[in-house]
Image 1 (spheres, helix red, strand yellow):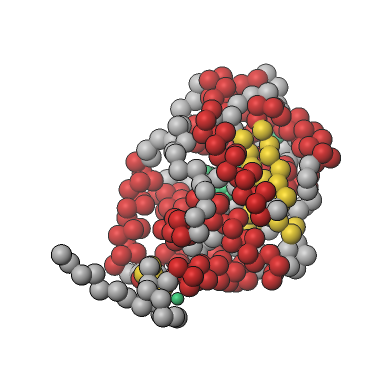
Image 2: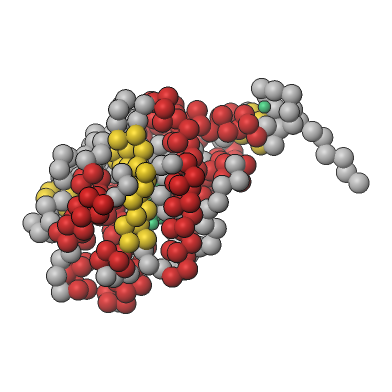
Length: 326
Ligand code: AMP
Ligand code: ZN
Ligand code: ZN
């Protein structure tokens, strides 16, 4: 039998349960929590994401990353003096969406966080699977992304919040940066900043408080805090070979030079913050942000349902907000 050598936490007498290689730290459960929470708090301060008295709309899917962020934001909201509202988008993907929604609603109720659910089926009479069927597209994740981003932005504008937060972490962001660079999609690449200022009435300010949190840290956080999250994959998720290779590449790089992801992301942020809204236009149909004459959401809905639904989404949201708990 092998006797495991116990390693003590750097800050207390307890056994360490986690090793953070880039910080050369062995931590117990409590100090790991403290470490991650203060990492998020420091990113919020470093990139000036939130000001006192701000209203922040947090987009929560029910996955490990956004559940982690909800828990952390809840812990720091008094200290940083902001108000938190959660948005969940129910995409109508059978059991997967039902379970995700339940998880988000339960967490919000247990922490008494105000939340709003945008339900594609009830609110727009169409679900993501119906959308896919009508469009006969194979680019499902990018279609889903367009719908989610449109709804997040529209809700943020109608609620008049100061920013909308997503749970993208360092591994996501760095993977997308390198992928966009390889594909020479520089317009998409420069949007991968921790904070984008927005344009009043057209596009909300966006923040990524987990910009410097690694994926394994979020995974550990949900487990260590026994938080419920959706652990089944979206049934439409496909293996993306380029993205997968990039993820493996950065993992390997990080192993050889612990901390390289964070230092790269900090330099990237310095270079691109403030440049992400260059070339923004207003959609001719719904009036929200667009890179062309008509925004992707209006274009897609016109193609699949015969009429652009941007303005309808905004109407539904206005009605919802009237009745909402926020
Ligand atoms: P994804 O596009 O799935 O990589 O998600 C990026 C971010 O968008 C997540 O970190 C969440 O903050 C948010 N998000 C994704 N799916 C949803 C959803 N169904 N409802 C609300 N927010 C979501
Ligand atoms: Zn400790
Ligand atoms: Zn539009």
